Amino acid sequence: MSPWILFSFVAGYFILLLIVAYYTSRNSNNDSFFIGNRSSNWMLVAFGMIGTSLSGVTFVSVPGTVGFAGFSYFQVVIGYLIGYFLIALILLPLYYRLKLTSIYNYLQHRFGMVSYKTGALFFIISRTLGATARLYLVINILQIFILDNLGMPFWLTTAIILLMIILYTFEGGVKTIVFTDTLQTSFMLLGLVVCIIFIMNNLGHSFSGTLNKLNSIGLTKIFNTDTNSSSHFLKHILGGAFITIAMTGLDQEMMQKNISVKNLKDSQKNMITFSIIMALVNFLFLFLGGLLYLFAGEKGISVPPDDLFPTAALNYMPTAVSIIFIIGLISALFPSADGALTALTSSFCIDILGLKRRKNWNESRQKRVRLTTHFTFAFLFFVVVLGFKLLDNKSIIDVILKVAGFTYGPLLGLFAFGIFTRRAVVDRLALPVCVIAPFIILGIDVVNNIEWYQPQLNISGLWVEKIKGLSQAVFGSFKIGYELLIYNGLLTFLGLWAISKKSLAGKN
Image (tube, rainbow, N blue to C red):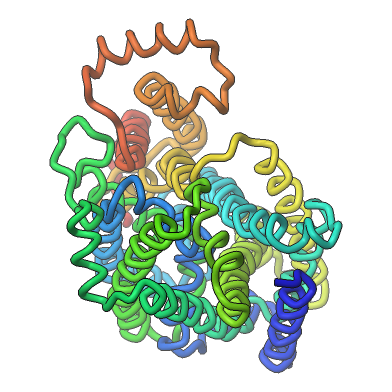
């Protein structure tokens, strides 16, 4: 299929986003950018958040895992579902009661200015790394399957895509993104459903027939009962729940959309509706992964897991299906990047620069600062995406969840300590505690999972064997999985307890 045809559809899709942005950003101001004037429709937010949460990682990486892990990823999805309900019942009431623009203002209310800025700083680091990893995955696919054939270098592809995102987000912010995410989620789900239907028809299978076939070869197995395995069901379910609490409930990007809804009741309806749909959509992606595995077997396709879906869609399916796949793929790209860019701009302006506290800055000056910050983060995204290009190619979903375990752990510890205790911390020591905890957990995880780190750290075989021996002596056969985030949050919690004292005020 001609790369020019695919490229023309990408360009047309972007023009459609610009049209939506034009109409939704009219008469917008700083409050529109930051919280959508607190007037977003909860149903639009719920539907649009599906695209933001799934991103290109779910679209490409989750189906690719089925060939070697079956449906075990659904263990994590069960954890996600639990986490979303906890956010709706515990965190959203807190955010609405305090009428927060940035959720990290809670940490200032509870502990003080250093804790507040520490929480915002860890969000900025977390979201920058997570969003750019997702962005890299999709840009790399577009590069390999379309733009290399047009002679366009990777750096230029990255720059153009980031420029596209800037053009439709810099004015309207959240007010625009609520609508563009809805549009993009629709196209992403369309791509998913069309590809499932095509492959089933091509293989001559029904939905139930496909499940029976996958079950016969052991690919529908969900629960892993090996307690030493890193993918044991309790590790995945608990890890998934806490990853959701941290990466959604303690994440300014995701909560920025939720608190833009008119009232708490609607925001809770949004979260619960979204969580149920998310579980169903994730199951469909796993089902698609099983179909792709069967399809690859018939067609003789042998590629890395993250390349399986794009290779099948672009090289072995009709032109119409390939076009729908590309539109679905870029629809998965933009929600994870545009929301992150907007949220990072909001957090830096409000939390680090204190934009809302500067009463002597008029609306015009605040807008100039916001735009400068927005463009600066776009450039940072550009640099970090190029950095991912230099790394050894791993399954991006593993990279993202691993990074989340380290960077969201301190946020989990800070919020848990604030909500579940009435103790006051020595505010100036909060930052050292939150920095030390993830480094200790990183050292433990390197020892426990040295095979995962060896390519990135370029460790010699002799040292790997020594570290394996140390791991065997300390941990036995036990392997740390996605519950890494819990250990990090717990260590942060204990560190905060060590620098705390009883609070007479008992704020929470």
